[in-house]
Length: 341
Image (tube, rainbow, N blue to C red):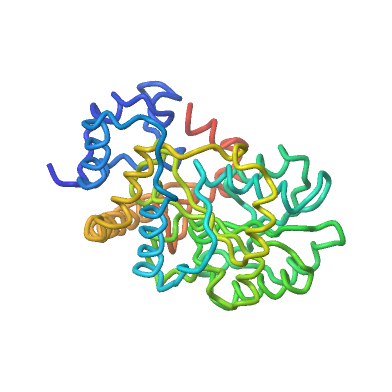
């Protein structure tokens, strides 16, 4: 078998949510896990931890190895120097997002989201007692685009945060530098914090990824960037993410909350992440080649199906399927249930 071949009997034997939630007769395509085995270096790092019985209080001498690995990865993959940025490691991106929501807003305050959006974003805002302020992406010839005028008009005196996924989840849109700059200008004008989830940044199909905080120093000063190896390397269950803070002021505000609230790091997840960010560049290049081919197969097949259409995503291994015609034809008003049944 090749590195990215998948056997159904293998994935169905796993106990993760993707393949157990809907039973053995359903082909699971509903949650953002890949089915490929992780890179050999990641497996070796996890196995070495097991072989040492290294399950005691750990990680990692001030997180120096983890921090160095993150600095290397951001510079190598995205040309972004974060060597001077305060950084905090969490168990996952959502934990970090909620931490900063609670630091920078009060119940009832508005948080801007570019919809359609990854559903846990909505849960993070609403579950914190904040108000979702929608800035819907609008369909365009080459995908979806930011509606800058609507963004400006939807902000009021109680709006505190712009929370975005870049690349966008679920449309797979890579925002242009001009779009990122427009978001930054609005944030500066209204004194808003920007929480930028860039967890899919390694999986770009057209062009390159520009970190929001790298567009302008004025934007970086009010930005927290979230990233992780979990999507690119299929290790979501190892629970490891980073928050890269754009200024010492943000770091100082973060430090006002007791560190016990955020918990510690999972040793195996941290070791796996260090391996991913220091030893797996070639594996990721091969994965991108494989996923790019898969993307075209999916887009071609979906666009041949009556009532369905999709645009090839600029990034991510997700595909946002437009069911508008299926609904308009009267076949169903609930596409998820229709396909599940």
